[in-house]
Length: 114
Image (tube, rainbow, N blue to C red; front, side):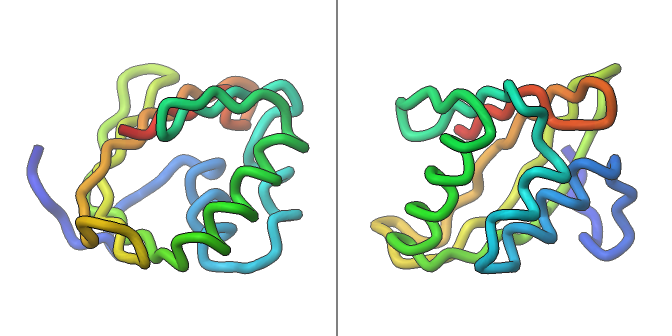
């Protein structure tokens, strides 16, 4: 994948909302980007439903104090793949992770981070 200036990336609305929520300590904004029955797979765990996703995000933000920097995105139908640099309070920081989003009806239906 070719790296682009993150400021020039055009992101689907749910991803823009997701990245905005990452920059905020308030997890209520996640409701604007995730479907009520969304599924997240991260760190070997499967998190189901909006309330569980909010709890996962609150815990991750408190534990790792991280910052996410999108590097590149590509889209194939409803699937959007984003490479991002994650910098924070965790072993190996910074790391480049792949976020695979599946969109449905204007929301994130699933997210896998690896």
